[in-house]
Image (cartoon, rainbow, N blue to C red):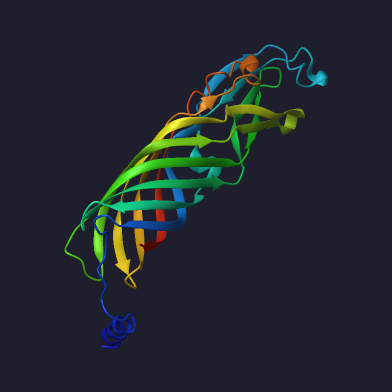
Length: 260
């Protein structure tokens, strides 16, 4: 009973119901922000590469050979959940549909993980190899179409699709083998470049006044492969590990919208 009374009170406090969704020939502007969790896609793949002499990496180990055993690591393992925010301009095609242009930034702090091991035959042991990857910063421009269901009212569900391109900043990596006092600092790993991107989303649209409303959205995003830079790691036989970089993620966002 208390829950029912509370719900009724909230509905009354919200005031009268306003039409939800676009209007034909009218523009809207939105700001949004939220979390973007990767669910698929590697930052690097795995490889096994022999190193005949560790001397160039540590003079004290001259003449000692090793085998690098690198394992794949995905976006979730290295960067975790990213933050995103952006702007959107929409144009109503009808009271059920609109097209929009969206600009978005997605970012995550640098991450350090164990990327594999270096097997040293002379010691018959594996030494841990760690990698620290610089910040992930991506800037997306996409156009899209959004379709609303129902005939208006306080809450209105919708679906949307987006397609465009994303520019990802360059990514550098520092590789370390602490037990061998070996560090490869600030190695170029990915170049700053554009890649195809897109997404699908669904959610609800909730109006608060005749001009202001909010959207609560979940969906899936895709960014294609990044542009690899092998200038530092190619000599170690690891040129293939960064022939990837694609990212699939689940964004959750809250949007404030103003209609004109």
